[in-house]
Structures are given as C-alpha cells and as structure tokens.
Length: 252
Image (cartoon, rainbow, N blue to C red):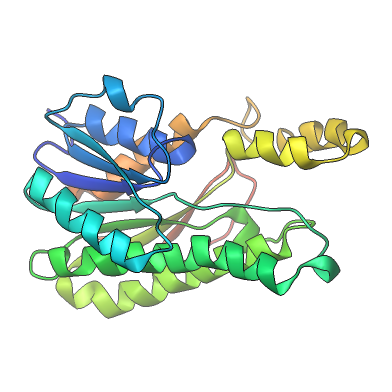
C-alpha cells in the first residue's frame, strides 16, 4: 500500500521540474492527482486517466485558479493535499531591476502561491489537509544577480509560516520546501548568461553540496513531498525544509 492511497492531491506547476516530480511521487504512492500548468507536460498522456488529469491554468489569475480547483475536486472527489512548485526565476543586477521585472516575478511566485493556497482553503477547512509551498535557498541566503527572485522566495517562506498559524485551528498544515536541485530552469539561466560566464556557472552549481554526487534532479524531492502530503507529517506545520545536499544548514 502507498502512503497516499485514497488521497486527493493537486500540483500547481506539474508539467515539469519539481512539479513533475511531485506528480510522479503522488501517483506512485496511490493518490489521485490533478496537475495545473500553463502548458502540457510531456508525461501527461501516459499517466493513468482514472487517477490523473492535467488542466491548463495561469496561477496569476485568481478566477482561473478557483475554477480549476472546483473542476479538480469534482474529478477527484475531494482535496487532501496541494503542492505549489509553480514559479519562475530571473537574473539581473539589483540596480537594474525595473518595476516591471519585480512585478512579473512577484505575481508568479508570490501572488500565484497565495491564490493556490486560498483556493485550497474552502475544501480543507472542515477536514484539514496539507499545503506544500516552494521557497528556495535563494530566499534564505541570497544569490548574486537574483535580488528580485530572492525577495519573492523570502516572501513565500514568510507567507507559509504565517498561514500555518492562521489555519492550524482547521488542521491545515502549511509547510515549504527550499530546494537546490537541477531543473530545466538551470538550463534557461545558463542560456541567458554571456558565453564567458557559463563555465564558471556550471562549476558553481554542483560544488556547494556537502553530500556526494553534486546537484541532484527533481526526483530527489519526491519522497519528501509525498511525506508532507500524507499522514506521516501530521504533526508538522510552519516549517521550511532545505533539500539541497547540505548547502544551507539552519535550525528552527
């Protein structure tokens, strides 16, 4: 038996990267899963249709998010866990970040997370549930040329702790993962760099981890996401968990 047998789960940003890994992990553990994303995922067509559905959704549009949640709950029969890896990143010198740059990344990473969390609330209010947001090591330690991204991920971490306090009385657990992993975003960041900076970037991203093996893939997050989504983490809320091979070692 899987640890999520009989559970109804939703993943915002489930088409690729950490979101795809969440869908894989939840299905493997027996859950029904709905994936929301702005584009189809390469695995969508091969997943079991009786337990999986993919929906197109822009998480910066609150009405669209609410509509998709209603359709997802109708398909699954309920809602037990929500995972929100959906997000974006960018690189720019702090002094060059424009208002438009900040608004765009804030709308996706912060408002998108808020809209998804709020959409889950009415379905969890009476019976509890688990929400898994995505912070980042960038929101804890900072990163060069990522001030706007770091600000949004710090905001997600703070939102997670505050909402965990507000919703604890409903037995809604709200935690976050702060990963440092390889995803397609790494390739996009590399491609945006000047050719002269790419070699040093490639070396840096795989050398910070204390555990052997360098930068790991998104599938390394799957077991922890499944744990947080299920009853095994029923006594945990308001936590930001660093999954980064030992790069960021902080206590509560």
